[in-house]
Image 1 (spheres, helix red, strand yellow):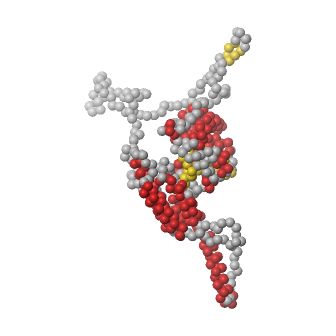
Image 2 (cartoon, rainbow, N blue to C red):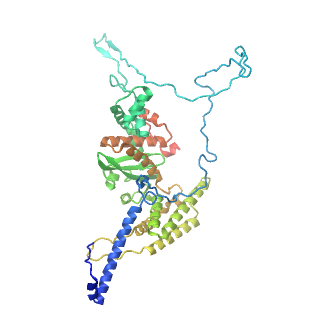
Image 3 (cartoon, rainbow, N blue to C red):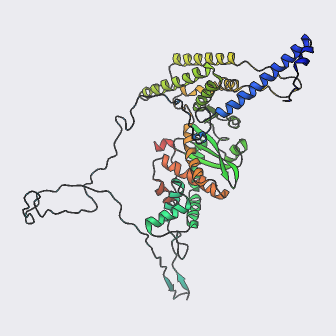
Length: 489
């Protein structure tokens, strides 16, 4: 915006009435423009993890001191009533028994060495035995054939391919520590040395990861296939530093499956290349990122956790009451759906009653109308400016909530549909932890290997299997292949 020259008092006194009116109107126009710019900048500064999609790590040391968006349930901390305990239990047949003899009476010092034992008091200790690496030598017999006069040798097992090498179990443990618990490669080698008295080289962990990624390929193909046929798929994406450049980690997941894919792009090009959304005919759950909406074979559900944060921002920054009312309405619907779903588990209904649906639809529409009244459309731009006029954040949010209300409120029409996209965010959170530990991936191959292994072990964990066993099975040529949800239930 060009700065107008300042006029002195004498210059202003010489202006006629019409010139003064023109000057005041120009100043009002400049003030309005400056107010909008100030509000926009204040909005950018005031965004944090509570009222936007920014991660909590971006909040800095001064964490926002405001109430949580979660609804208080009145439960005490710790295990709830009916929750099964996990205390250690006595084994009927322990692995080892140590008998502690009683030679003398602790009261009168009488000799009890010849007295027969009447009973034993029992206590058991769960512990692990000392462990060390075992070396197995494979010897292939060499013989001379009398018939053909050839020197022949027996075949070694397929997994024994080098004169000296590490076995599948140690490789599985190294990959488990590095990819499941995010222990850096150097510390993984140190930990193996502390446990087993033998320190492998860094290259061992890298080679083990690559071997796991290759071995679990059949499982990844099946995960991809099942996601394409799933009823509901949660989608999300996040920035990922690879080779010093910004890449994007895309995730697609259900309660039983997880799939991660790395791509240089964030939008449609990446989603087309990954191939899940183009084939999906069920529901895709995500935020309002426009690239998702380009796929029209599937229906779209929108994350209401994002909506609650955006509504909180409108309430804080613009002091518009409709935003708080709509946030409360969404929370109330969620609570009623949760209660009704519990009752529906014993019946046949899977949605709110028709009168409740009509009530909430009417409330939703009424709140939006109040929002539109507080945020009228902007004035048409001058003919010299091209494009649509810029709208305020409240107006943009209102337009989205109005246009996509079916995807916003779908969870009250079908209890099987989620209220939010938290499942995808939980899956991505672990990958972001890995990035925080490692800083970035130095090679694209290393990043892709991690995505493959993380897809595999996350799916294994969701289906209730042992992660370390699944890694060992993959290296042994028998990777864990996920069952469809119906078969797993």
